[in-house]
Length: 95
Image (cartoon, rainbow, N blue to C red):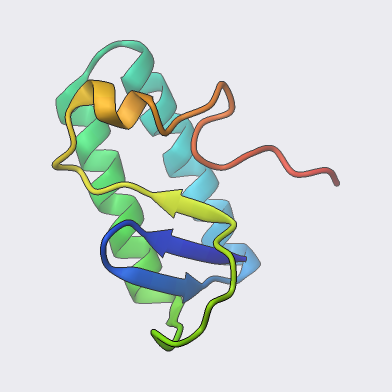
């Protein structure tokens, strides 16, 4: 899966990393539902850290489409809300 850190670049992540991102996505979605901006920002920051640490950065010239875009934590609650679906940032993929 290819993940874009909004404003930074793209990373290829493996299934283990994606599993962790799914956990964080669920926590971020719950925080968003409670309008808890501090918790939401913390989960987004954690998602960025996981991608940076566990993902492999793609070359800037690589034009592969992103499967997932993670926004930075400095967006407003409403700006971030516009990027989430009912399933969060990470869509439920068929098994």
